[in-house]
Length: 160
Image 1 (cartoon, rainbow, N blue to C red):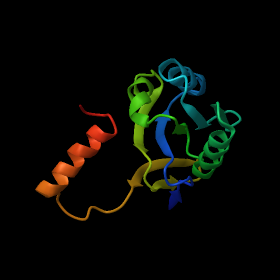
Image 2: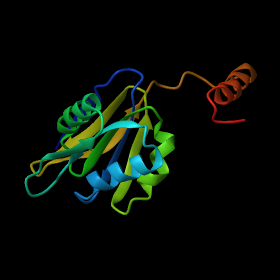
Image 3: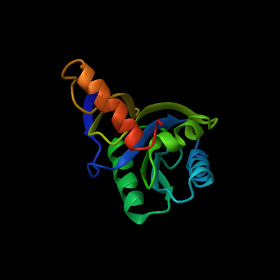
Image 4: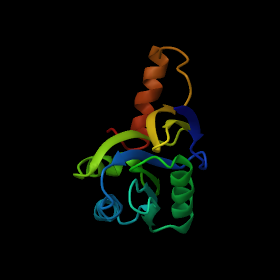
């Protein structure tokens, strides 16, 4: 077995969701879930089929995000993983709907941070062991940091 670290290639501010499912139907179901919840959201999805033709299946409504999803999915090449890039919304807006899909097994991350995916490769194929999401923790928040966090959440509309 060989361990690899695969960096997700994307612009700094682009959000994405990385997960694993168990069925090719995932491609259409994620597409439908997004457009039902947020029709203005732009997205691109890549799904790594793990049997049959073993292709990267894809969908979306934005050519740039679709291209990014296909490229990153192929770099990962891990059975039944999916990667979804979004704009005009955030993962938090669609995450519960995606998690509720019957074929979705795991969500590894939903972030805009730099991410490395730790992959195991054997003769059979590849699988995701885990992810490294963002930077190493630098300390514990102070009272000043708590005020900043609370103000920030209200500024961006997630708390009132």
